[in-house]
Length: 447
Image (cartoon, rainbow, N blue to C red; front, side, top):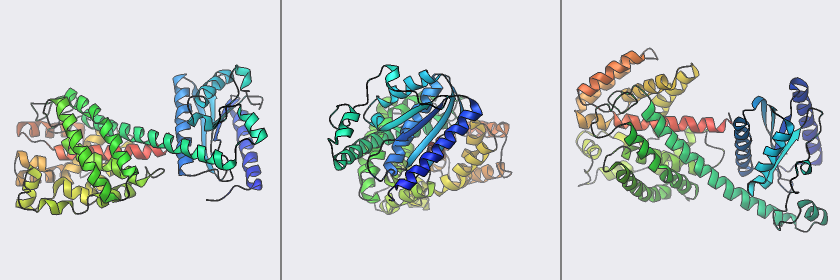
């Protein structure tokens, strides 16, 4: 990693000052200048950038909370470390109070340098707010006092900062990934219409579950998704992570069945979405938007999984029996191949329609139909036959041939699926996976 030279620091400082002046001149409102306090010549790393994102979320969340309009935001990744300039329509004193709360919130906050540049170009002072001086990270004494006397060595400071970053980033990343996974499940069940599936309109072809059953089941899986991510983050290899994930998945299923009183709402999602959360952990910080890498990790984790289905006596589930009889790979084959149906059909259609301005319902319903057309949905086969499922897949493909099917047409399919007791539950799980990958990519964008 490149060290920051004096000339580079001076250039970055001048560029920052020019950008601040430009924003102040354009909007005549205070500017929040946010960067990281990192000791030593190396000012950036994946952990530093991830911690910077945490700080940005705290600042932007605070602005939203006080109903302050964000006039312009600039995010810069430069040699001297990541920086943010945010011009907000708010009083400088109120912004300074918010900044101090964030800086004093926890150990990570003490690595944040949040300045409020007033309309006269001067910084709002810390002591003017009545707050005490910043404390030393190591001993808790006034930071300026320790710095002037060089009480602590650079090595001590760097070790402390590294410890703070590792813990904060690991905790925050695990929490964020689990939130996004649950969000994906909630968006999936909320999407309406979904032929044969539980949605906001009806229970589809299911008499034993409803919208609220799925809400409770989604919530109870949050700790599992967090553990799945941490498993990937701490694993030496994809194969090792999958072995550990299987045990976590068994416990997650027990928690799900306890919550639903024995109803299978998310067994498929425990498998597929759990693998994806673990794969994100394997990818590491700064790679959440790299869908190819995440799905490649999924394939590496599950390599050889289909071989176990071929063993004598392995035909326990409907999916296993279908493979033994018809060589239909189902969700296991999907995982071992790196979820190609999710990437090439579900996610692709979802993001295309969202970018075209379609609603979440429209984009999700069409993405589901694209998945039904491409996937080998063993749920559909178990409720009817292989031939019937293949017939419905062909119909779904024709419905979205033009790139978009009207909601009225998808509602007609819903009526037919309910009549024939069909439920593309496997496709619904893959839709949730596509939503999860989309949310991960948006997370990287710092909206």
